[in-house]
Length: 318
Ligand code: MG
Image 1: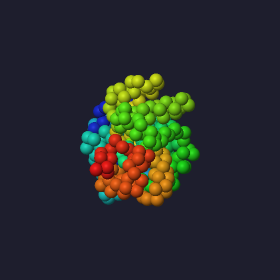
Image 2: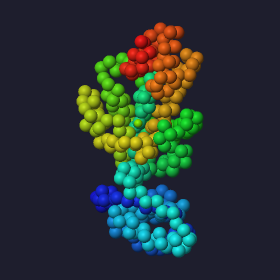
Image 3: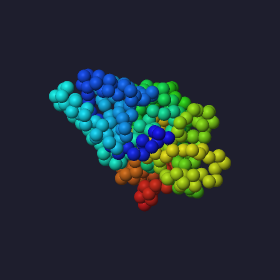
Image 4: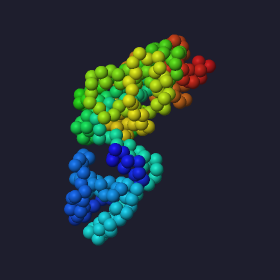
């Protein structure tokens, strides 16, 4: 409860790098205010009035709270004296702040998280993955460079995804284009996503993982999501919906990478079969290649390699 209240009132984050001398002084000063638990790579975390102070092994110190400016003021002055200069970051930008808070809250936890790829690509399948990441797996995954798959190159994905898959439990579903085109007649893209997320989440939750949170990278508001599933036999509940979830939670990040990996594998197979490099996304290049393929193989080919519900279909066939 105490923690929760702190999260509500935090408005500011002030960060700067300390010299060894200031680091030592901080340690002595906060000796009695230290929390029992420290985040990974931190020397300590302490509660100072309405602020939380975290000193990292690297020397970085972070003050968070509605009076973080007051709590940090003395230390910024001290650092100036000890090392001659100090470079301070003060992020009181609201959305960035919210995002930082989410990272603090959802990063170092035991969680099942799910994410999907392929929903913005005309060619290729949709892949949804749910993974289970334990707190103690996080340093290793960070070291691998786990994060948002959209920010990682395809080569890097191919390198780290098998290592992640070896380390953590996960469940993936690949929805082929043929199946998507069958499905989509009766429901929209977000409903398809909801059904797939629900399946992989139920699958992995059936293995009884010990979780603090079950997280979905948000693609629909909570009530809309559950509404999509109103006819499902079983529905996974108690889900936390996070925007940019792959930046805030490691299980979502891993799911994003594994999904991307499986997507790329399917994509490579398609390319090989057609002896062509299919463009990603849904832009004009997609229309151009689509027309070439239809000329060569007839329009039935699209049913097997593309998502017919996209506007591209009309443009390709006209
Ligand atoms: Mg996503």
